[in-house]
Structure formats: C-alpha cells, structure tokens
Amino acid sequence: MNPEPRVVILGGGMAAIGAACALARSGCAVSIVERAHELGGLAGSFERDGAFYPIGYHHILATDRTLRSFLRLIGVDERVQWSRVRVLFRFGSELHQLGSLKGIARFPLSPRSKVKFLLLMLRAFARRDWTSWEGRSAAELIDRWGNGELREKLFEPLARLKFRCSLDDLSAAWLGARLHAREGASPLGYIPRANWTKVLCDGMTDHLLRAGCRLQLGTAVERLTVQGARIVEVALSDGSSIPADVVVSTVPTTVHHELLPQDETPEVRSIRYTALLSAVCATGQEVSPDFYWLNLSTLDRTACAIFKLSSLNPTIGRSGETCLNFVTHLRSHRDPLFTLDDAELMLRFCEDAREVLGLDLDPRWVNISRVANYSPIFDKDYRNPPVRSVNLENLYFAGNFRTYPAVASTGTALASGTDAGRVVLADLRSDGTFR
Image (cartoon, rainbow, N blue to C red; front, side, top):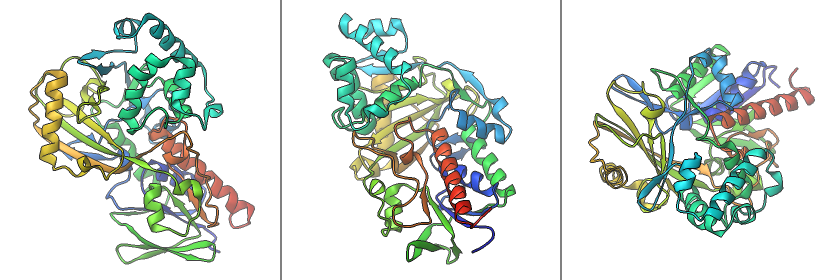
C-alpha cells in the first residue's frame, strides 16, 4: 500500500476541514472533494458590493473550545469581540424576553408554571450528561421537570418551530442539552469588519493547502468503486478519479446513500433531515425593537425566526445598513415552500416584518439560500452512527449527524471531523499501514 495513505474526504464543510487537518498534519495524502467552489458548507458566504455575508446566522460561543482552537490555529482568535444580545420570543401578538426574571414575570403563565420554568432551567444548566435521557421523549422531560402548561404554551411551539414535530417525537436528551447550553444567555462572539465564517473558511483553506491537501472544488462525486469490502476509487464529475486507501464521508447521510448504496450501517440509513430557507437582506431602515434572535413561536408566519445580524456585529455590511436574516425550517425539502419563487418568498418575509415588527421592509438587496439537508431530526430514538461503516472496512463518517445530543454547531462539526481523523490514524497504525 502507498507509504502515504491516500485519504479522500467527501464534502467540504466543517467536518471535512476538521478531518483533513488531523490527517494531513500526520502525513496522509488528503484530497477533499466539494461540489461548491469553496470550503465551508453551511458556514459558507456570499459577496455583495465587496462585502461578505453568511448564508445564514452564525455566532461564536465562548464555551466552544474546538471552534476557538481552530480560530487560534489561523491566528484570528484575538480578533474576536463579545456582545450580549437579546433573544425574543413571539407568543400571540407580543414579544417576550425569557432570558431575564423581568421577562419571565411578563410571560403569560401561571405563577406556579413560572417557578417550574426557573427550576427546570436551573436543573438543565447544572446537568452536563444527558445519556440517561436517550430513548425518551422531550414531552416526558417537560412533564417530569415542568408541567402541562409549560409544555403546551412554551415548549411544544418551539419543538414544532425547529423540527416541525411534537415534543412526543423529539429527543429528551437533545432538548436537555439545548437547555443546558443556554445559547442566548451568554455573550456571543464575532469578528469586527468581517464575516467571521469567511475568515475561518479562508484561513483553513490556506492552512490545508500549505499542509499539502488537494482540494477538488467545484467538482461532484460521480461514483465510488467498491471491491470486496473496500472502496478503491472515487470518480469525479470532471472525468478524473482518485485512488483511495481511506474514504471519510462528511456529506448528509441522504446524499451518502445515493452515492454508496452498498453501505449497510443502519444508523446512517435511518437519519432524516429538515430543510432550511434563509433570506439575508440589507435595509437602510431602522429596525426595532432591539434584538438579535427573534423566534416566531406562534407558528403562523412564513419565517420561523428573524435575526438582526447587525445587532451582534454592528460592522457587518455597509455603514448605516441593518442586515436581517429570515429563517424558515421545513420538515423536508419536499415541502412546496422550499421551491417557491424567490420574489414570492421575499414578499412573505416582508409580510412577516410588517406583522411582527410593524416595519414596511424595503430591502436594498436580498440573497436567498435553500438547504435541502440542513439538520438531522433528533427524534427520541436517535442514535449516533458509528465512526466506522459496519461492512466497508475503509469507510468512516464525520459530521453533525454524529454529535447528538450536543447542540449542532460549527465547533461540533469540526470536532466530529477531528475525532474521525484520529480514529483513521489509529486504525492505519494498528494494521501496520502507517507509522
């Protein structure tokens, strides 16, 4: 076998970057195949008038050690600044801030339910390990630690907002981990005068190229050749092919099985994904009230949430502009809304702005992204796939579909890729292929 094991990574998102970084610096010959023209995946960007914007909201968590280690790797961690933001929830026709005692006091719940809510949040914050709740429903968690009113008025709408499913179907372990993270209660990070995901992706692209990685960008995988229990070659859409000693699949599992129906790993086969619509726009209008993250929990609007990106990063875009991001979660890409005409979709988002914010939105420009495979649906029976295929001995997996019950993020994807890279290296060394 080749003295430098030939590793082909399918996909070019954060998990692929993490895996490539671990493998390339250990001497493997790494190739990344990505159909987009740059690395990044869901952390990708678009350009408008010389400025770069995320295709959807992203922020840096102070507790995300993996992400911050990669920012340090490319020398930009010290540029990160931190800001406390407002997270709002729309119930009925009113906006509520549940991150403060004053906001909880105003929320339309009975006094008993408000006390239950505070105790639930304290218990969740104190608990780090949620494995004992795997296989149980989020409804059971809320009923056990809260009550029926909390379930009906607060948590059931939020479950339907995120996954378009009921608490009865959603994983208790995932919900507990989400409550533990308290994502909007701590300062969030950004890089001034930049889109930080663009800085990360460009920096890691340069790093991987210097490490000797081969980046096949703007190229799709056409076919994987299997001989016996091994993948031996990856054929590409440009007519070329790459011989493979190891393959790391970081693409969504639905895409993976279209490419490799021979893989029999059962957990991978069972994963389903939500779809995402993301419209980023800029306006010269003032947008009030002040918020970063506004959840539209009434479930009666086209958008599930509105983000004011310039509330977190005041330097994003041009001076004097407000940058907004309308986000819609769909049960799947088969929802008719997923293929709705851009102009009609933006008209609906403008209706949301009028109804929710009292704003007749006048966008200067709009960028709409459609993500067919956005987030794995973490139902109560969800289990992480193994890092190795059960029947193809040189196939490995990395991605946020392997980080349950942690809240999926840029950092968890990087960590999943790094972990897969370590397993690959350990296997190569144990069988004498690589030292």
